[in-house]
Image 1 (tube, protein in one colour):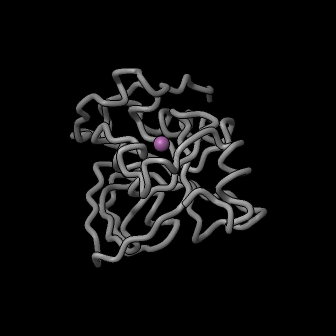
Image 2 (cartoon, helix red, strand yellow):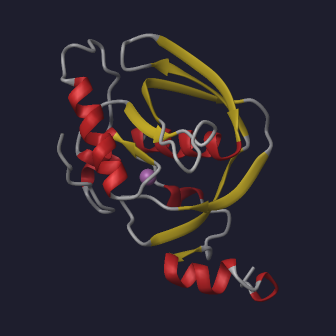
Amino acid sequence: MAILKIAKLGHPVLIKKTNDIINLDEINLKKTVFDMSETMLDANGIGLAAPQIHLTYRMFIYRNPDIEDEEKINISVLINPRIEKLSDEMEDDWEGCLSLPDMSGLVRRYKKIKYSGLDLNGKNISGEVEGLHARVIQHEFDHLNGVLYTSRLADKRAFGFSEEIEKFWKKNDENAPK
Ligand code: NI
């Protein structure tokens, strides 16, 4: 396994077109997923999409908040994903991204979505999820379309260094600049 270099905001690979993986055997998918997992955990992330490690495949991994607890890490893989909203209901929450280290933004996402795609063995998988699980999938899916969370801010001002966001936006809610 290896820790890979993560592309940072401004690198063109983050806004490049990505393609479905037609033949899963064509690329060393298992090794790529293991390396991505190691890279994500090393960087303390909860998701990582292929473009973030300079690959233009439609594939991402993420830690599954519905299964995880303090002792168990669960990493899911979604290949050639499709997503659709299950209602128009949206919610705002703070997000970060390994391609924008040390920064946070308040992002508006659909609350409930349906996803489908392939797992690491090429098997069809799908599910209906909400909350953080739905948020992570939407964030990673966006990466495959060259979209970063900064394009989906609930409030253009609600973006900055995580340290300052913690200090001024998340605490003392009454005084938060909302
Ligand atoms: Ni990201």
